[in-house]
Length: 420
Image (cartoon, rainbow, N blue to C red):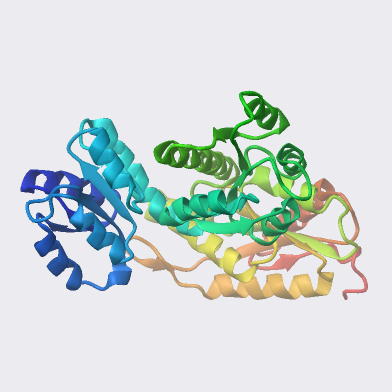
């Protein structure tokens, strides 16, 4: 569903600037230059299609923020814009349940607006835990986060927060005060750090009235950040964004380091890390397969490297589909690897041979034509408990499959007499 942004600005020039920013964010602006026109444009669309609204505080027919009230009452996350950083107008804007406000003073503020719009979409799948015994403070914090579309979990005790973290893997931030019923906030932060690194989970401590020492206690215990109560609306949201974006940046770097750029499959490095970390003691029943595409060079020579890339992507997609619960990887070139833990060797062989037949039957779309390709597969299994030996044995069987006609699954029959 195409996401819309309701834009009501004072003047065609401002409307065009904001609409251009919305399009840069990959969204569709629904624009107007008055509250009356904005109401009409909003009524022409389905309310659920609006991600947010960007509304000028002062309009010809709504000089005191009436258009902002309209958008908020329509249950649309609303970003207010103002002509300048005027304290009186700022206070009037922040009296309302707005996401944030943007003074139209410089280009940097417009860059912030783009980030803010993008966050409203990302936040729909980003969890935040708020831990506090102060009901008023907790409710205010929850309200601010919900305006930004975060998935919010409200907790009173540290144990409730730990349960939420265990149940919901999309949580990226914990906000906690220091006076919890079951432990102090600093002890809670220290216990979180034993389970989650700073690159996995951001933690913000909040407290008021304890002077400067509490911030140091939180940071030394492992918190990423600290905020003093009462806090400023804008500062709170800026700190939340910075902490969440830090976690996301680390995740993006990690994905890039662990992912094959062409196929999107895990790369060889990540394969070894995953197997050694998740299967430090390899199971008694397991199998490993090396898959190599037959005569792949001829695809590149005949149709070009773009066609070769298309073939690799197509085979990678088939591997992802047929082996969703296994550890898979592009090892390099036209070679792929699959580790099947807790799988009887006979079952692994049947699945791999079925996959070989699927590859053979698949019509692969190339830029200018279609083609077919086959693959050879070498298997190893229960004869060894070392991953490097499994790969070495599978490589020998792959070599044998290539030398005996290709398009087949080979394994060491002397090592698997029971399978025969």
